[in-house]
Image (cartoon, rainbow, N blue to C red; front, side):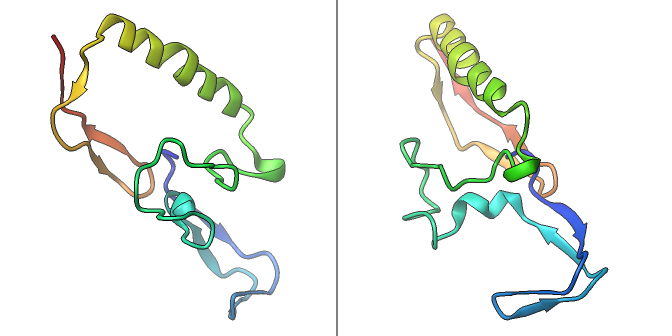
Length: 115
């Protein structure tokens, strides 16, 4: 998810895994770590394009599920990537992809070559 975190205020007293939160406490939801939870994913730090991501919350969950989730997945998987690889069949990474940011996260360097 390009949004790495979101600040929130606690609405009512609650305890999560032994930590008690009081009303008006500030918490930060770290979406960037959601798919790296070893309780839900085997070897979470290894990039695996075939991993079952059903428990992932990249697009939110419940009433806060992103309305554009299906469209964004379709645009990337069915349009953008096929178009890119059709036009540049020899496209390949030539170095490490660098990501920065923790609130708004994304690649700052994607070194590639083709031809």
